[in-house]
Image 1 (tube, rainbow, N blue to C red):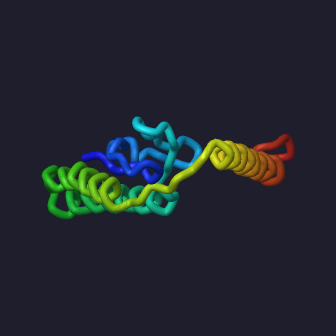
Image 2: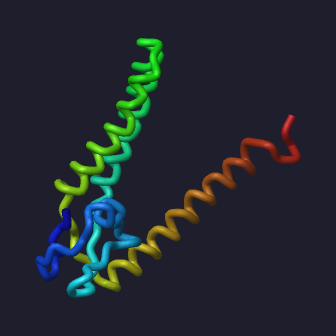
Length: 130
C-alpha cells in the first residue's frame, strides 16, 4: 500500500519509507522528486506502543509462566506499524527546511553531549572522586 505524495498526490511513498521519514531524513517521491516527512509525535506514539507491547508481553509471560504471551510483541509491532503508516500524514518539506532541521539536530546533540560531560566533570569519576 503506497501513500500519496503531498506535493503531486501520486501514490509513490511506501508505508515502510513513510514510517521512517523524519525532518532530517525525509521520504522522496519517486514521481516528482519532492520530499516529505511524518511528524515527530507520530514517531513518539509508535515508540510508546513498542514499549507497551514488549513490556506487556514480558509481564504477561511472567504472570502466566508461559512463553506464548511473548508472541504479543511482534503482533503489537505489526499493528503499530500498520496504523502508523496508514494514519500519519506526510508533511511537505524542501531543501532549506531539511538543512535547518539537520543543523538543529547537530546543535541538540552538542547540547546533550555538553550536559553529559559537564555532569561527569562536576559530579563523577574525576580525579577528585572519593
